[in-house]
Length: 343
Image (cartoon, rainbow, N blue to C red; front, top):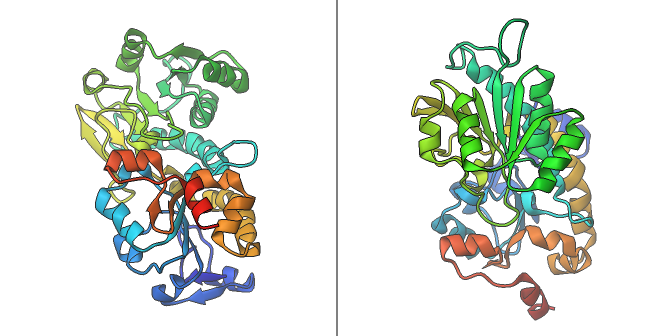
């Protein structure tokens, strides 16, 4: 195993930690990209794409909504095999990395919202939660999946008033059962959602699409009607975003203000707690990497583990992700047919 020097620095893992575990520390980035399997959290930068060699396996986040046609074509031209780990499924049909990181993201979103409501975060100086004699913070969560569930639990634990919206009645029932206490839930009805957002101090968008872009649920008009210096956290921004006003931001410049509403739209929210996220990713990716190492080639690995195929978006330079191809107008090929052709 090769590790780029300082790869774990932000998560407080030293090169010594890796070398003592048997890894080789690479001080030249070019050397790291000569490996047969390259694992990254963020998608490779254009500079890193130029370092990739044919037939190598790239495992990283795909971040569907942030990808441009030239970028994807540059990956295809490298004739590599690429797996977007957020689309990986296990044998039970569950997205294990999405599930694990969503738990972290939900809890982290409430911590970030608390910071953004404060004066130091650019907010109006309110505390997230509730104390005697003061009305609790109003939080609207759009999406009753794992992120929404854990955000609701964290917010209720701080004493906030929480309203959860989703298109799925089954998800709302499950969230209410898992939260373990009464929480306001509603299907997404325009009038009810509009009223809740107009009173909200914090709105969190966390609807995830299993295939394509996340749906835009909140129009610019609804955002404009929110309270001054209220906070939006669009956790679905990596798939395009739930709020019409959302735009990609970075950890260096995580927020912007539009219609007097603070927007936080960083796609990789879990990197705020990167050490915890690193452990979560390692728990899932390490067994996967061992299975790849035990296989004669990538095709054999995919034959033996069909549940992994859902995460493959480029195979031998061919785009195999239907919704990415449709959005970028790139011809997409069926992965099963490609595997059969190369058998």
